[in-house]
Image (cartoon, rainbow, N blue to C red; front, side, top):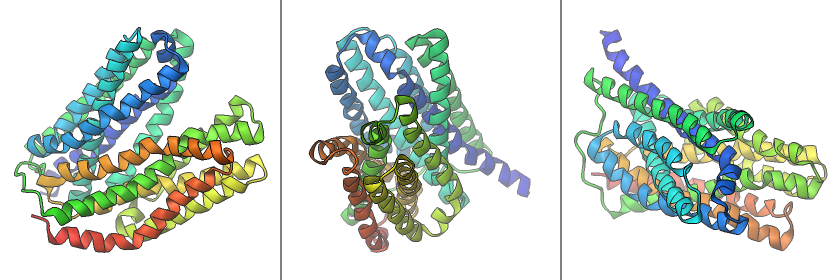
Amino acid sequence: MFTVIARPAGMLRTAPFLGFAGFGAFWGVWGATLPLLRAQAGVSDAEFGVVLLLIGAGALPAMLLTGRLVDALGLRVTGVLLALLGVMGVVLSTATNYAALCAGILLTGASSGAADVALNSLAATVEKRTGRPVVTRSHAAFSATVALSSLGTGALTAIAGSLLVNFAAGAVVVVALGLAVVITTRLAHAEGAPEGQDEPTRPGRMSWWIALVMVGAIGAFAFAAENAYQSWSAVLLTDAFTASPALAAVAPSAFATTAALTRFATGTVTLRRPIATLVAASAIATAGGVLTAFAPTLPLALGGIVAAAAGTSALFPTLLSYGLRPVPDGSRGRATSAVSTVAYLGYLAGPAYFGLLAEATGVQRSFLGIAALTAVVLAAVPALPALRRAGSRSLP
């Protein structure tokens, strides 16, 4: 009897990891292929910078709407949305002018936002059903796959030098993993492991939504810090320590690797001791930012970046897991939309915020401003239990 029950549950438990691996595979291709994309479309650096803002413009409305879709159609829609993202990459690879590039990036952003919400909803649902640290570790799978996919795409570019080949290879992986998500969730449901999405519940009162938005707002500070480090750490090494471009590339690579390892290693403690995890992670991230801002040597600056990676990488997955745990299955898609959309605003704002600071104070001292973001998270953590209690009392 145990085997019969465990089998569908075990299949469903793999779905978030497969899904986030596919999501990471796409974004690894994306990051390594941007120079080819800009060259093929024939746009200037300024035009390309503006075009990249359309990722967020497409993602935000899709993130707001996808939660309702997941609640209505169930977890199996996650794999479909992920596969669609892979296909959008191939569509984008055909852009040969500014207008086509704008349209392709807008659609890619919408597909990415939809897949993001669906994947996080899937991970939170599986985590609640199994009691395993699925959210944090599936985010770790994303970080690890981004790094691997970037390296693979770089090698493929050296061989073929083709934008279409890069995105087509990525699409094969992403679509295959999307179909695997569909199959695992469908088989688990068919063999007796309920998806938890078949009987949508009514949304709770306004206090529930306020609590979720507040969790998302704290996540926005965490995301802003994480993205600023990822986007500007290489610039720090070149500007402040005159590192070569090859050496400067060590910084974002070290950040991503540390993030993946931290998420894998801390999965259990983030599930069992979320508040303690958030306090420790935000304190470590803040200390890392201060060290980075005042480091007199390159090795110390890298040490600060690694510390910041260890801290910031644990913040959003823990917030998401903690905030969504009391939410009924039939409303989890909408709840994930609320938290993720607000948090994503921070992700978009982080590099721009840092750029303004760098203009005023220089790149290295600007990391004090990033340390201030994680200090805000540290100050806000004690309010989270009260927020969750207030929201839980109004749940349907």
